[in-house]
Image 1 (cartoon, each protein chain N blue to C red):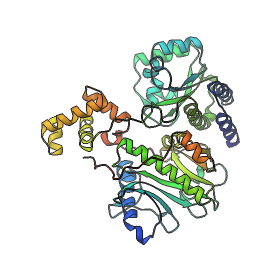
Image 2 (cartoon, each protein chain N blue to C red; image 1 turned 30 degrees about the horizontal axis):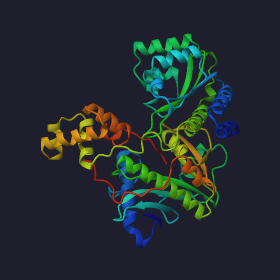
Image 3 (tube, rainbow over the protein chains, first blue to last red; image 1 turned 60 degrees about the horizontal axis):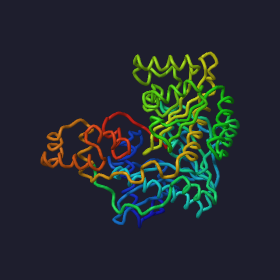
Image 4 (cartoon, rainbow over the protein chains, first blue to last red; image 1 turned 120 degrees about the vertical axis):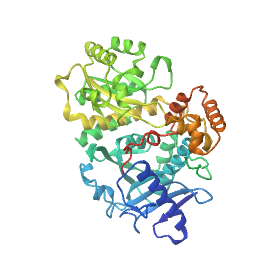
Length: 204
Length: 255
């Protein structure tokens, strides 16, 4: 099921902990990002504060399946703080624009499950935007991820030309959310389906 | 530059048919300072009729030769596009992959036929065939260096437009992916890492016979009869990832 959470939510501590742990397994252990790790277990950075909103997909047993972090663009965010050079014009800053960061699919998912969870997460992001009057998301992406973001079918516009930053080519994009966005997703084959109830076994 | 980018992207997104996309791409290619374009999946086009992206304005003779030789698979430019997600100029090929005699021949032949220099943008959507968007010229004399970042961006949008128009949603054989049990997946992972059944049995702490059986079942699920093919297929559909197998620095996303 989908949990929409703020970082201090006392009722959902276990869901949040599972998410920070899953983020460490994906972004630090697998992708080797140079980001802070708490107690060797949780990936938590300076933007994981009371202003962040989390969309977390969890199994009935509470296991983490996938998650994304939304940062308000009215406050410091990854694009404005770390990568403003990726925007040719002004860096997005608006009450109805949020930044998608830490799009995370659990490392224990099997290929077929990854796709289900990914589709559910993308669909949830669009629903969340439409329910909360969010008109656009922005995101920073490596070029290989950029092609996947386009493949979700939603309307994207680049914020600047791709650039080499720290040895990788990154681009920033605005994702425009409109009433017809759910239709665009389903036309691209992104349709919600029943989620796996528990994440797969850990690989050896 | 961004106004131009947005203009070209709008143009790409408005196309409603294969013909429209071809016309739009011809215009965009010129605007970027190139003569030719190719939007293609890296497959043997003649063997894969139907749901494959393959749209270009290359000279006819070159295209015929290329398709008849199934160069979509062996083309050094395509191979290079599999080791990077960033667009590259063909003069950089040797920095990406080892070029062999046969590769030099292909590149020479292309040059003779009027495809001398190009810029290729890799386009990879997991679970689907790898592809790319290439912009090319007759020779290197008028290569539009300054347009490369824009070509990278436009190439990504163009490939997505081609995907939307030419491939039915959800089609690319990924709906009914074979599923491995967790244990089968563990065994397949160690096979891909080059371990024998006996070695895998020691690592996982199970009987060698059991490992052999898991691998046999996994091969059956994929309809293959060789362990190497199991590794290839599980890597291709994302059941296994390269980063699990080769421990090296790998940063596909950055957010």
